Image (cartoon, rainbow, N blue to C red; front, side, top):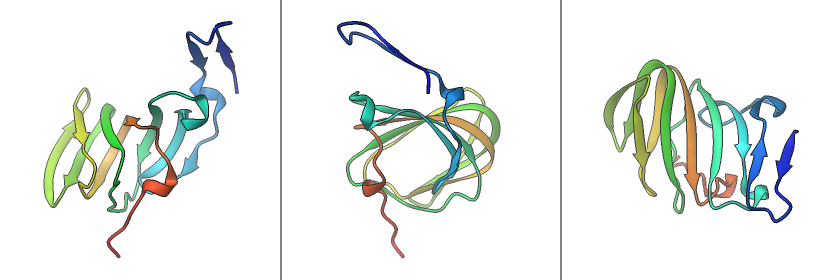
Length: 120
């Protein structure tokens, strides 16, 4: 992965294209920033595909729609999404998405697999 950082760690540059895409609970994800980068947030590029309902106890997520149309379900309520939309998902909210959507997901604190919970 291409990483550049200032000598005093005042900034960090990461190249998303250098990261491998993998299957996640929401679809196909490519991490850009993670907890390993010692930031107070994480950023992922995600292609929604067969998203499974889940929730987080700690992290807050922002979904920013890059392209496509679909919907996100938040505690049983369906919200339509299209390019340019942003939605904040707070801790404890059960959510999943549908449709052909590409999003940036910004999480604070940084995303950790250990904070993904299912009701099943």
